[in-house]
Length: 262
Image 1 (cartoon, rainbow, N blue to C red):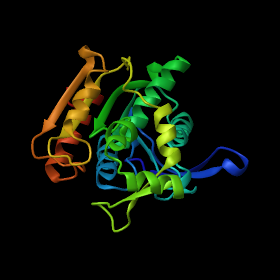
Image 2: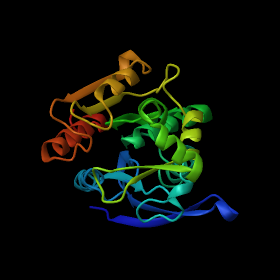
Image 3: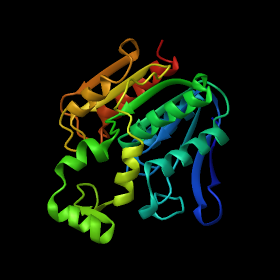
């Protein structure tokens, strides 16, 4: 069993520089790459379960915290999809140089994963990916899920303060969504044209998810290649998908995607 090494990497320069915390487990490929959700961190239940699976099966595993999250530096209020995508690609390039990786994106991490697919394809590096595993994915959530529900009061708050606040079911602190996050989100939308992933995609989605309705994920599927997409619907599953049964499903799916379950 090879240890999980805490690392740090600087992304950006001058005033834009931020210190990104990374945990890397070296091992065989296919390697796992964890991409967390909005205000989540790399030591959450699902991320830890993936790392433990990787340790047990001697696979590589890489996870990091976006700027403004967890152990990383940077101001959360400056966070955007473009910024967190840049950090994720930098970590991927630095610690996942070999081909054959599985991107595991949870919630907003699913959006980051799909943008990584596009950027890697633009570079001609689609061969670096073996598969995508998306957990309650929330691509384009600012445009698709939030904008239609914004109240006049929230709109005024965003114009006056530069952000809006929303009660969180998962924390005593409110969720904060900035004006620049919405503007940048529009520039990073993926549910506009067919996405050629170049690799299989497996989606796990709870049907009782109050944050990302399964109808949103059904819409996402229409933008993915028909022959390479599999979806597992968890009838009583919520957004977190962190119950023991959910974790077991996650790990069974990972085993299949990396070939351990064949």
